[in-house]
Image 1: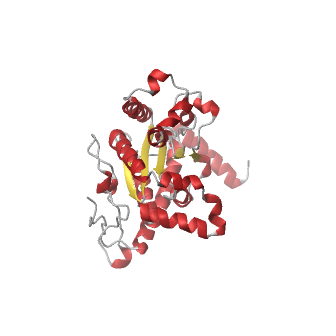
Image 2: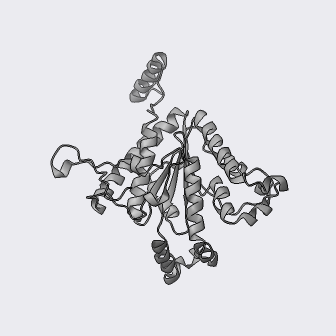
Image 3: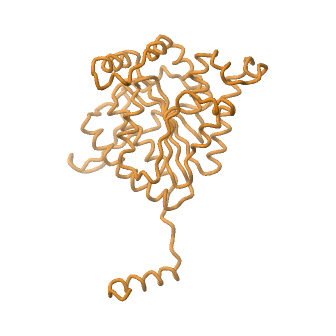
Length: 311
């Protein structure tokens, strides 16, 4: 369990030059079906962590993320897909706003997935996200994803009727296990073809969700974010937690791991997410494309001509 875990590393030097880092493995879901959601407290905060330290970490993370994004774009070989899932009011929208605010929009796209359209329902459940996958050199963020098919649909199995599947398929007891298998195979295929997949579960407590929903109702400028359907889904809290636990346990792999991020403190959750993304990009050992010697000589000639004003 994470309670009491110390994940701060201080580099040598005086207090003003100390650098703090996060051990992201503490938030990474175990594979091989050994995952337990109740081992990840929604309000977890490392020993000694403060808002000031977190601000230092995320500031440096965002700077490094921008540097790595430029290399990713220039190299044009890899892509990065970030999948974000969580209950209503978990903080996905604000995390996207804060964590990705400094990136170059040319190489970064956010796709929110809502109720499937008729066209989307006429395809397999991976189709609508497949056409939104990030191209090489880009970062893609999915706000919800194909995981809704083993979360919302599992909590509301009656919705399978809308998916126009053959009856012999939608009534199979193995349908959820088969969908987990399809997702794992899909993500393995992405990884084998140069798309790095990282999945974030915003682990929110029921009490914190209650407070955030109340805040939406109390602030006129946030009323638009509230829906009576949110309360209907809140009443199914335990079923959703069970569905998330199953999905994470079945689909957290080495190729596409889940990270269970404490979401009760938005500032800490964002800090962890930024660290996870930087780590994923660092692991690619990204480099700017090299320029051949002949091309370098030609560019040097052009540079000198520009300096002299002869061209």
